[in-house]
Image 1 (tube, rainbow, N blue to C red):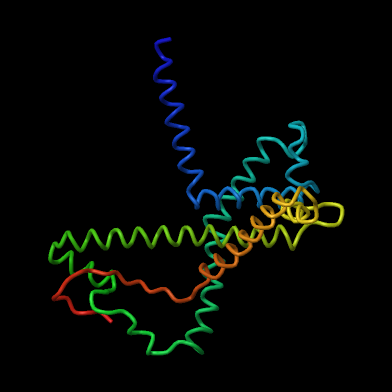
Image 2: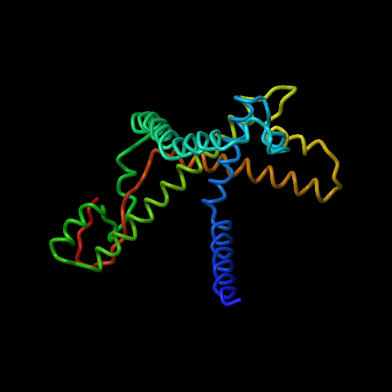
Length: 233
């Protein structure tokens, strides 16, 4: 009984950490991408959807070796393939944008106090200005988190499109195709409205996320409140 106190504390701490991650949007996108990729792989390689594959743990696709291979594929896709694909597509969009739509007038949208982080960081390092260095460090962390979220969101949108449009058949439906069938069923007025709203919100979110992740324009400036600093525009 002496260990019950610490054990309960560990359980509570683990549960709290799980809940915090569950309500964080990035983890929602990661988990959804994981489920969609798993369902797509099962349909392609085993001719089964996700729901039917785990009806029994004795199914041939449910084993440790396949799990390890899938995890390797998932990590490769999220860490390298989708981020690289996103940047390649962005380069193509950027070439079109800067060739046909970009103008010099859009260069001076920022007022005084906005600076390029790399330039201000070099200056702050020389002057040992910890205030400016802290601002730039927070800005760099925000940019890094932004790109991670956009990479995950881009992967989620592509996996959703592939799962819904590119695979499956009349006799074998993917997870997203089965979800679309819910629109044709009658669960009652309010339940049907909730299903329609949920699917609509997800589609709108996917379109917005796709646009944000492929946006070719990225203003990498940080605001540093200083009355005597010249603008780096």
